Length: 119
Image 1 (tube, rainbow, N blue to C red):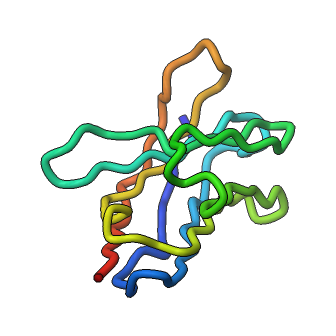
Image 2 (tube, rainbow, N blue to C red):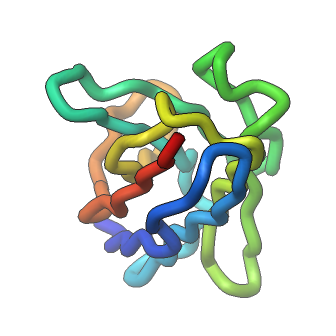
């Protein structure tokens, strides 16, 4: 299984931006479908979006469309989540995950990175 490490979280004021990174080792990300998830305190984990090996992103939350962008850099074996116009309701632990195909489960997860948006 590929190993994933997220970074880039932190504290930001509403309206600000952050870019999360998900670096992989033990595998080539271009061979995986990559997803971003988030979990706020007391809430279930949400699917933020994913990016396939073809590089086309798909967003799972209407609330992030137009504000969040998922991309990947094959040379760096890294996937990114660019978050703009952040809102307090975006506060959560953000996780990246990998799966071999659309029919397989998300078999690899990072440890998560905290994003806190202050009002």
